[in-house]
Image 1 (spheres, helix red, strand yellow):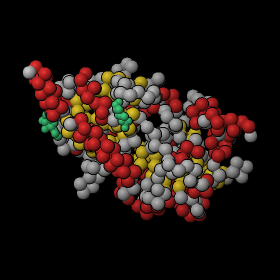
Image 2 (cartoon, helix red, strand yellow; image 1 turned 90 degrees about the horizontal axis):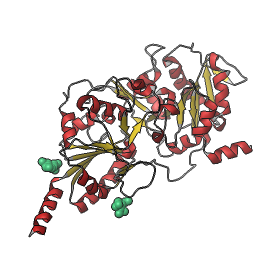
Image 3 (cartoon, rainbow, N blue to C red; image 1 turned 90 degrees about the vertical axis):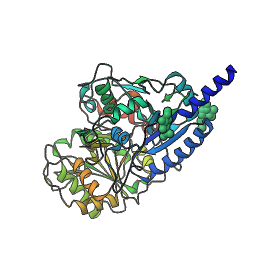
Image 4 (cartoon, protein in one colour; image 1 turned 30 degrees about the vertical axis):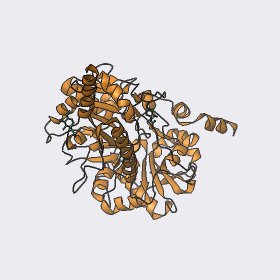
Length: 449
Ligand SMILES: *[C@@H]1O[C@H](CO)[C@@H](O)[C@H](O)[C@H]1NC(C)=O
Ligand SMILES: *[C@@H]1O[C@H](CO)[C@@H](O)[C@H](O)[C@H]1NC(C)=O
């Protein structure tokens, strides 16, 4: 008799708990495909567990007549959910998810409690990408999105109480940090570090979500001639910065043009015919687009635009590009955003310039057709690209391995197989390159030469 009562309580517990999984990627077919695969697997696992589950693709599922903006900053996507489940897991489209481990987690955390658990990151130093930690408490922690995090119903209900017509963000730079900051500000809620369930690093059996980096199935299928690199520079940086690039990643690139305001055959640099400006560089970047389509990009499928203080691992960049279809009209970058509202009606994505911006040929053509020139020469090039891409219908595809700042500006656990970093301020770029962007065997190979 007692056993029956316990059994029926257990069963009713299982019956009532339900789950939403919200996967965040890009507005692109690769994300759609990954979410479809994850959905199939998650729903099958949920059926075995007798859990009622739904899976949403934050970037591709909420479109009506047009795509809403800013869904990757999470709060606007939570506003779009058609219903509130007892639990919501938020992860990236590439994350590995194993729902079988969820019941164990439920045992410890009732959904009536305010639960915000994930894999916690913490800044080593005050960093520009987090406004130097102003407006955040000491030792502030935020979730590694690729390792997933979970919210209980009560937290989601609080988020949904915010006025949907409110402005949500000015600049959206690091969504995981800004989301945690929002919960802290609104409800004084702090992230609970739960690395046994939300995992990155050691392989643990209990993981519900595991961070994962997509690698191409075939490798070395992109030849050097398919990728054309154009570096924005000016005469004042010819000696110091270009010297660094030539001694590091640029030595691996067969097609590279140093686009300057002065020709110097010794480097060599080319004169784009655009005067240098202190900021923005819109005119320079637009001239790069014209030059690429004009003839310098002949035969190349991809255009990479980098700063003269961008460091890269070119081999990893090409490996990453193998995942994408060069025939698609896409821009790949580290995605930032501007001016999002909670209802998704305003704002735009842009590929932040310093980490490197990558375009397919058709994306460059479409950008120039939409925006033949910059409104002002000193407009920020990356944000102008974002505005023009939005009107031209070119998605900005997010690649988290590109970085707008220096390695020490990121939590160590976030840096996994990085492709790029940016800015030489207060660092030795050569040692940063060797420490973060060269793999050991590549390094040995180089020193043998
Ligand atoms: C989830 O379960 C709750 C009860 O805990 C119920 O009120 C709600 O309708 C369920 N939602 C879905 C989407 O099944
Ligand atoms: C999911 O986790 C369970 C329990 O730890 C394990 O038995 C199962 O093999 C895992 N499934 C996958 C696909 O890894």
